[in-house]
Length: 165
Length: 193
Image 1 (cartoon, rainbow over the protein chains, first blue to last red):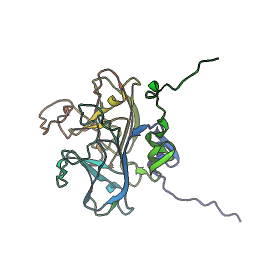
Image 2 (image 1 turned 45 degrees about the vertical axis):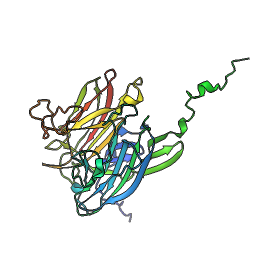
Image 3 (image 1 turned 90 degrees about the horizontal axis):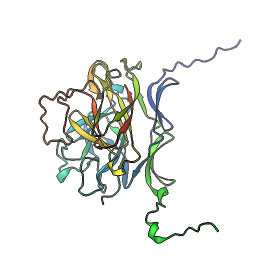
Image 4 (image 1 turned 90 degrees about the vertical axis):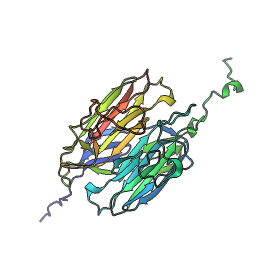
């Protein structure tokens, strides 16, 4: 007597993934929408990349030591499976504002390379005056704040454009 | 005999013989990284990237997605709102913006400003924003509910540049401004919730 085929009772994932260099909205195996990032062509100069974590109820200052005003920021966050999906977020604190982030953030800018220097074309990651205690970083500096009790792992790439002439 | 080309040192300074060693950000096989010529200097895998739709069975809300193209005219702006994809309070979980510039626009002028909740930030060619939304309440998404230019009582210190035009931080939307006076900028927009 033949055995019936095995049917795996998996729940179809519904959301966004990366497939090669494309961002895809999928529902199960069906691609609903797609946006290509294959044509990304961003020239950078110096860079810094690191892997680390933000402890629960803590903040991490993104250090840009050795870099000028930043032209590229990538932050990837990975959460423990024990954290409910709706709580898988952290906050980016920049210029006194809390910005949300779940898995991925990419910022770009075009820092000035002319004289006189024009500010605010790039991302300023240097806390002015070095006052890391400044609660809202109104004058530069970027913090990652983890409001949860569990640790969040992060991958970061920071890069500047070409040197100031 | 055909023309003989010479490597006149007077002109060498104008040659860009070093293109292959530019450091570039790349997306390749679900990785993002930096390469210098063919050497990969740093790479982060996005193969495990998964952002669940609010409409998935686990989250039980109403999700959605859209793609859109928009033009930001010279010295003009474009306001991005998307209440059709956002949850009840207009929040969405992902915004991706790609910017294309006119080929005649000098490299140093290739940027836009974007304003969100009373603060102004830069963008050159790419931006990816993510957050988390919850059904029925404001949570930690990006607010793309309606935006208004009805200035009432903005009080910002220090005064940001360009000037803020959104009067009330409870309003949503992202306003992209093109500081260039001559050329359009084209936005390719992807929104997901």
